[in-house]
Length: 313
Image (tube, rainbow, N blue to C red; front, side, top):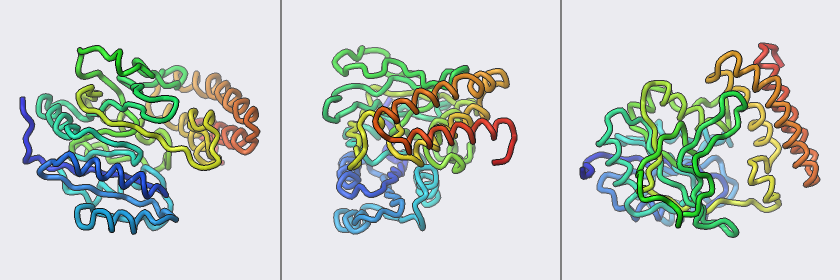
């Protein structure tokens, strides 16, 4: 089944302080040559020259907007969606280089399945020391531990089986496309998460609304990653390279459980696995001489548990 080139697609790319990287990402999106394409760059109040470089490089080919203040991913994605005009919204992290046929493959999947609510391109890691490795062929969480549960994580792309071409998923990080009507139905991204777990929550909301979600091996993007100066690679790998991000990570795992898990599952996470995770992440942070990261994870865990118990903090 061929895709309909008359379908309009809005590609929404949040960015912060990555002028060169976001320009490479945008250029790859424009190279897809989709007939009805809108590219929106949402600058999360970058202190660098992101705005100047995007405008000089692409002119009217890209819609550039800037948040009033640094507000992180959930707000940036929602702000991009507010001005988007496409039938489909493709949310894409700025550290990607997409394949030329990515929009064709994603849009074709929606035409073939009217119940499809989210389609993600297969992300292939392309960073030093970890290249040509597939992120995952399907992402979910264990409801009793809140730990990520990925299908074939870190699979070498050379070992990718020919079939199936689509794998079920509950959410997918890095990039995903949704119909505009589905985005509106689930209410967009929950901005109370601020950062971390907001895309997981978004995917679960779509699945819980009765839609399918898949990862397509025929739609691919190279994920180049980004390591800011001063970040410890081991901590970046765990997603706890900055204190506030770490705080959100620990707090939001409890918030996510509260929204999506059963009462007994919430107790399992809050009373056992969240404290265990706090100890593990704290030890890793201390091993890397980052007392501030360990403290941030502890505070996030404590706030998350207290909110589960309906105690104001």
